[in-house]
Image (cartoon, rainbow over all chains, first blue to last red; front, side):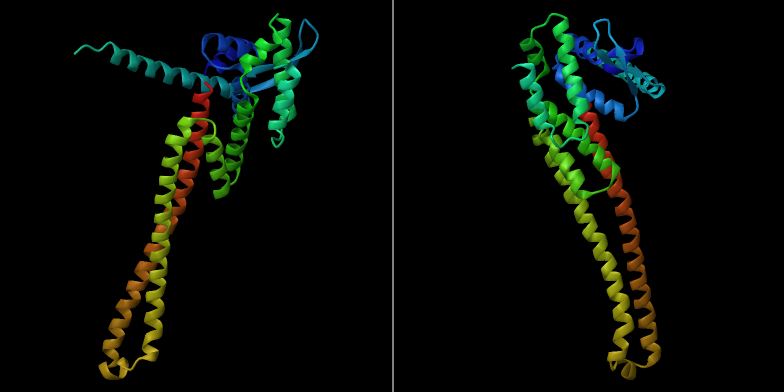
Length: 93
Length: 193
């Protein structure tokens, strides 16, 4: 979900995804790539190569229609889930 | 660990993964960009984690995909085992549950095949026995016919029950097969965020 949310805002490259996520959540950046390849087989985004300012082409990730659909679904589920948890945590007997 | 070392190790671990070139490309790109942003080689490699673990993730990905593409008992076993090798939690919790489900499923299979065989045996016995017995002569043919008919119907009944069980089992097995793979995929995403 976090990966797709990043792509929704703009096309991103692998390093950007790995870096942004591992800054916020404790996860080794090495595990982001297997996740990306799994999501790609589901057709949630596409890859293309683009030259960077510094020369070498970078692999960019661009979210697809079905990726956006999937993301909205996940967002909805997450909101419902976190709302339910909040209610449970703040419940007073 | 240095960049070259990391990539070499990863390549070795990925030797039987189809698209390993693309994977290696992703990682070397990642390291390159990190270097350009002023991070040290050690720091980047350290943040990547262990190449063996990375390779396991890719292998599990592929195994789940393969198992999805073709129904095969061997493939799903391998996928589950690969998944279990990813972490302690999986071995302790997932494997026993999977094996239990497998055991129950196996029991049901034996039961439905047994029912099928029982039905067949009754029909066969009903048809064959009168030829070999003197019962017909002693008890009269009318009596034999009524026994014959009820026995035959019993056989057909049990046989059809067996067929229904068998069909249910095929549907159930497929369902469990798909659900197991879904479960593995979801868990993989949770583990790796």
